[in-house]
Image 1 (cartoon, rainbow, N blue to C red):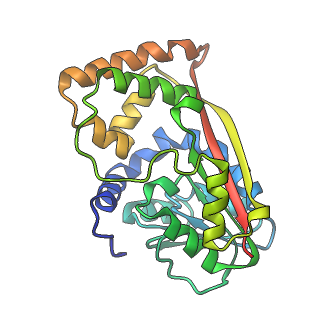
Image 2: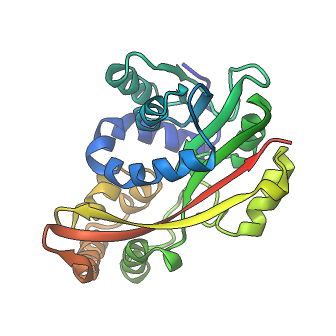
Length: 275
C-alpha cells in the first residue's frame, strides 16, 4: 500500500475513492470515457509504445491503450481501484502507488496519460514533474481536466443550484482550484516548468453529451459516487440538500431528450513533449 500524504485533501481523496470505487463504472465512466480517444491522440499513443496510465482507476484507459497495440502500465493510489482494474483486465500491469512519487526509473516510458486525475492531487505540478522524469526524450504527456461551469452547461446548472441554496462556508480541505489548468497560457507555463517544450503545447476543449436516464442522476452521482462535491453536499442541512436537488432537477429539464437527459459537459485535453 502506498504511503498517503499527510494533508487533509489527500486523506479525503483516498478515503473517498476507496468508498466509491465500485460505483465508478455505473456513474462516471460513460462520461469520462468520451475523452479517452482525444487524450490518447494528444499523447500520440501508437503500436509498440510503452504507456503509463496515471490515476488509472478501474483500468478503462489502459484497456484503450492496449487496443492500440501499445503496452499499458496503470497506477493508482486506491487499493480498491487497483483491485477492480486487475479483476477486469488481468493481462495488464497495474501498480498501487502515488502518481506524485512514481516507482519507475527515469526515461522508462514513451508516453504518459492521465484522464481527469490531475485535480484530485494536492500537488499537480509534482505529478507533472514525475511524468516528465519517467518519459523518454521527445515522449509526450497528456491529461484531461474539466472546464469551469462557465464553459460547461451541465456543470453550470449544478453550480448555480449550489450557489443559490447551499451553505458555501462548510469546511473543506484546501485543494487545487477547478480552473487551475483552464487557461492555455498557464498550461504552457506549467508544462515548461516541468520540463516540457513550450512550442509543443497541445490544448483542446471538447464538448460532449452524457446521456443519463433521470433528471436527478448527476446529483445522485455527485452525492454518492463523488469526492469533493460529495464532501460539500454531505455537510449541507437536509433542507438545503433537498432544495439543491430540486433546483438541479429543474435546471436539467432543458437537456431533455427522448432517451432521458443529454447533459453537455466540456473538458480540456492538454499535452506537451519532453525536451
